[in-house]
Amino acid sequence: MNTVEFKVNLPLGLSEDEAKLLLAIKLYEVGKISLSKAAKLAGFSKRTFMEILGRYGVPVFAYSPEELREELGL
Image 1 (cartoon, rainbow, N blue to C red):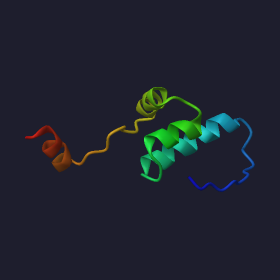
Image 2: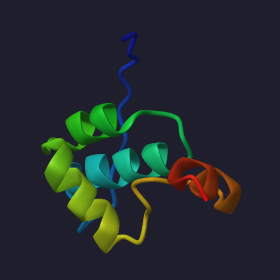
Image 3: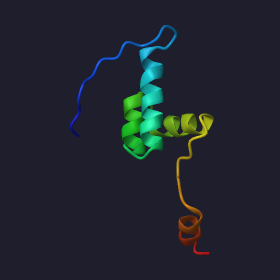
Image 4: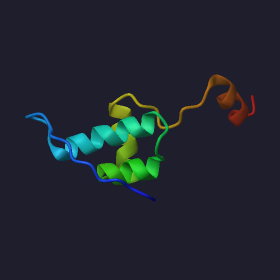
């Protein structure tokens, strides 16, 4: 995986770890990175990251109604 390093001045009250977590959540939510990569970026296991996604209201599996019916064989 190719990466680019960048530096950000964070506002007071926002830690580096929290910023990484929020970035990972958003990148996963918009489909820019996989669940595994997002979890790694945030510094959590996949299982823990999935639980965190739930707390932020981000679905782990984003199926359209049609895709879900197809997946379930309905």
